[in-house]
Amino acid sequence: MKIIDISVSIDDKLPLWPGSPLLQSSKILSIDKGDDVNETKIDMSVHTGTHIDAPLHFIQNGKSANSLPLDIFIGKVFVADVSETKEITADDIKKLDMPKGTSRILFKTSNSKLWEDGVREFQKDYVGVGESAAVWLADNNIKLVGVDYLSVTKFGNAKELHKILLNKQIVLLEGINLSNVESGEYKLVCLPLKIKGIEASPTRAVLISM
Image 1 (cartoon, rainbow, N blue to C red):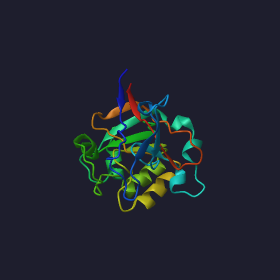
Image 2 (cartoon, rainbow, N blue to C red):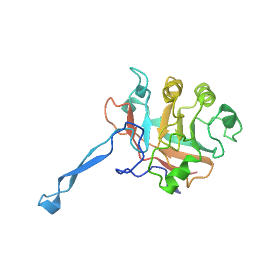
Image 3 (cartoon, rainbow, N blue to C red):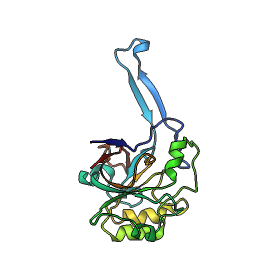
């Protein structure tokens, strides 16, 4: 069994969505200062790094991250290599050799090169899901979609495209690094934290070879 970590490391230099706060961490207890233990406080957006978006992110009274069924976050997933496209379309998806009954899909795009190269500045021209792809995913019994950058959908129309997906209760896995992952079927594990009422949650996402 091979486990592939597709999460990004969180630090204060991680690329952030415009307007998101920087990670702040501080020691509230320290052995070096005479305390019995080390204890750290962190302050960050729940959309920092690798995270899942729940319907509540864009849908008033939608489901929060902690209220979603856990079986969404564990199970077979298809990793699709669409690294040649600048915007993921329905035609791109239709061309994939995707197993019948696929309900989770992760798109490997040229974005993963940004993680591999250590690019720290937010890139507005990242590759994401376009409108036709969002509609296709919403109409084809998909329950989880992931893209290898800070948002599943393209910059500039994220609100409209997020709503297409989240209105169908499709969970979004964002901020993943697929640079070391080949196209194919895997087992995905990406459980959210059990914090009540939040619209998103950091997750340690891994793929397990099947």
